[in-house]
Length: 464
Image (cartoon, rainbow, N blue to C red; front, side, top):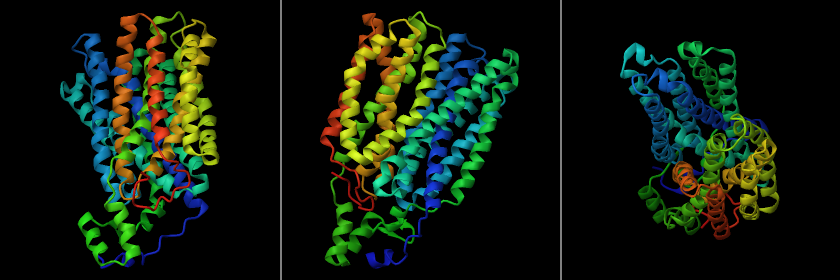
């Protein structure tokens, strides 16, 4: 360990050019796109073919449940990955962790496409499928958090919201790419071709994307914020006891910088971030997951109408996401959060009236509005606000945990609760009520949170 904070500041951070910023932006977008594409590829395969090729010796219903269970284990692994890689990213740097996560996701997804089926190796096939799904989720648990942190720390303060929103666009890109690939396969292949070899193609093609993403990240420089941190020496963050030792020997100014990050009582910023995450994740689970099935099952419209609505809403999101990021830079994060969540509360019941009207235009308009106002707009704000809430010393870890815990609580539980309430009441109003509750949780969190626009991200302490 160096003897003083000055030693940590002797190595000046590398200059960052517009090209470096562009590479960081594309890297963040591509990594998030790959994460969501991998998960969407798997979820569609689980619903369409995995019950037949990995669980053929059980009834179709049990096979579907088993296939969906292998999908669900990935979310458990995501939480473990958030803890493990979040701590690593705070200690040795964002760039190194993002190498590992992209390789884990890409390699496991590719290997799924090469797996022998149940007919070839029996029970070992679904076991290997679960193992690869766990590896995939373990890497994904830190990918979007790492990309969010890296891009926020690269971006100029005045354009941080706009540039950070590019990570959110990766969700649209990945979901649309996976859905498009499966749509092509289903339209050109017979069921026999799909079950024998066609299902493998989307997974194997992800190998090309992984190579490109890895190549792109090889030339990526470390986050300038990480390099400028007062507790980083020779590219590695000092442990807490080492920092306390430095504080004891440092002058008043140097010591206070370090003490602010080490001795601050943690927790308030994390729970505020969790509340901000809850509205976006909860609304997403209702709009993008539950409503798709609810509309197809309960309304007299074509089964493709809700999925088409998600596609159109996602395409509109390519305008919504950067626009919200730009407005957040202009008017502040809190103002946009309060506006979007209040708007979601106001339109929740009218949107559900449109969706349940039974007309195709009504379903389309309601879904597109709900997706862009209550989900994608909040996701754009989340990408920058959560990074600004946390101090540089624990930003990666806290952001990853807030995202994954919020996602599990809201996205995983929400659709199940909605299904139960609509079954009991025989009505759609519980869905609207849940949209209101989720949005109010985020509204209150934004009301309690400080304005973070333009905050110095090198500071080690949380914003509150």
